[in-house]
Image (cartoon, rainbow, N blue to C red):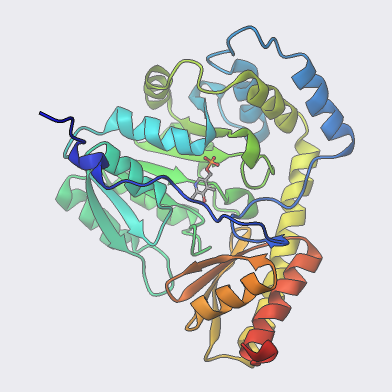
Length: 355
Ligand SMILES: *Cc1c(COP(=O)(O)O)cnc(C)c1O
């Protein structure tokens, strides 16, 4: 008998982010700010002190304490992960058994359905409303009638850049038996966080990441915040040395510099607001072609009938964004990057460059 692959992996392909080199990268919602000055010195000093021959601290204690103090949460509820991506996988592995139901919203971050598939869970997809929000009543109904074990969504939403209010999320958490996993990867650009009450519920996990506002996508660092019981499970299920020493050291530098962090988040919000106002000029000029849908995160989501055409045209200008069927997602970048991207989109609609 030849060795055969099982069903759940048979048709999988490696995750393939945008490849190729582009002058202006507004495709991955990364930060455009790179650490400099004293902050950079602090990072290098801490990395210099790492004992490379030793295993890392498996509980990432110092890091979790600094994270907890930055967000004003209880450190007992904090678990660090190799990116929040790993934590999604840890959560699913812990709380799902084969055949359990997981509710995701459409559209949302693709990793949820990917990891649910690896757990052989049953995926239930709930369409977002016309304005890309979540109909919380419908979600509650669906969760309770299907006996779903997990509800997971990003808030603010990637890709829609819309947000569900804190009071609505609270109502959801209180009304379902399912575990609600709230991915707040972009909540540092917005003000509806549940992080400070994560420990008040026994069915809530809030995920955070250093990949976006902190500009640390390269070190792979994310956090899960929950009550004691859930937190105990996550710490037991994760692999012991999931966050390497270098990432822990840099993460400690990050959360030891709250001023730098707050300033970075504010600068990114300013850039986002600038990009939105540039794009709203295009919206006014070409209302039938282009419409802003959401701008709550560090990227703008736009409805655009010729999304594919715009995407290809920007590529010819050395600018990369993300294209979804009939929609564009544009990350906020440096001023000149925002300006160039907006100009190129406008020029596309004006029929410039013989496109
Ligand atoms: C970028 C992003 C993350 C971050 O994942 P990391 O593994 O921490 O880099 C998580 N969730 C959503 C919705 C994202 O867009």
